[in-house]
Image (cartoon, rainbow, N blue to C red; front, top):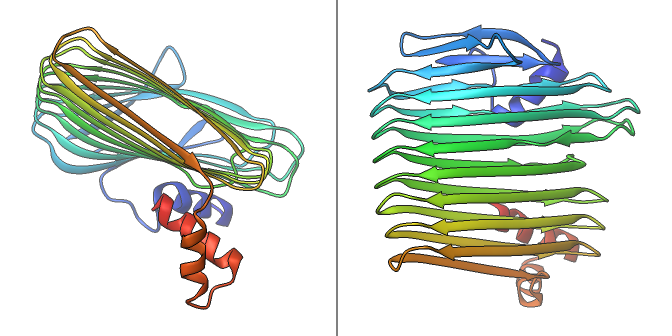
Amino acid sequence: MDNIDKNLLKEVSDIEGELEGAYNIRKNGQATERKITPNTNIITKKDKPGIDIIVKENTKFEIVHIPVIITESGIKDVVYNDFYIGKNANVIIIAGCGIHNDEHKDSEHDGIHRFFLEEGAKVKYIEKHYGEGKGKGKKILNPITEITLKQGASMEMETIQIKGVDSTIRETRGTLGQDTNLVITEKIMTHGKQFAKTEFSLELEGENASTHVTSRSVAIDKSKQEFISHISGDNKCFAHVECDAIIKDHGVVKAIPEITANHVEANLIHEAAIGKIAGEQLIKLMTLGLNEKQAEEEIIKGFLR
């Protein structure tokens, strides 16, 4: 790997030096490095591009890395990854995609990830997106995540769009069984003329299923963002959705909530707040010696932390 590869891997997966645990590194549409462990197997799909990641039941605290990097202009990479998490397993999965584009053609990665968690399984899933390069070609990322939680399973999903992504449409779908819990946190920052759209569609089917979705976003310059959520409670369940956004310059953020209670004991909540940086926050930081631009940057960092 050259320095560009190493920097992209560091940005999206915090990879430096030798990796522990299982991993699969994909570059420009091809798997370049792979390692399996006694508890985690990685198998190349035969019918389409992608891999199956199979974690044995009762596996504890193993880390799996599956980053994707693109360094060629004009490439469109589509990958289908399925995760099969065994009963009572507890693992961390670190994904993410970084694109380096110095040319005039667009580069795009579309990752379709499906998670199947057996009874009592736990997963922490981290996905970071990042773009860089001096070319006029766009950096485009369109991820789809589908989640199925069986009884007692839980998943924590953290998605971060760091910077440099010109266009992204993220779709997240989930089906939650009895006594399951899904926590989703997304952080997005756009600038220039960038566009970001995220859509969540979650079905709380099982008794005592619960979810908490939190979106924190910042839209700067002439960038635009959309946040859409569809939450359906089909049993005794609980859902809380929060969308908080800061707009600056001519940034635009649209929030479209939809909650549907199909059961008398479905408790569903949606909150949305969109606005500019509060003046009192700026004044407070400027009294500490920061200029206005520095104060704004500190407030945004804290908001997205």
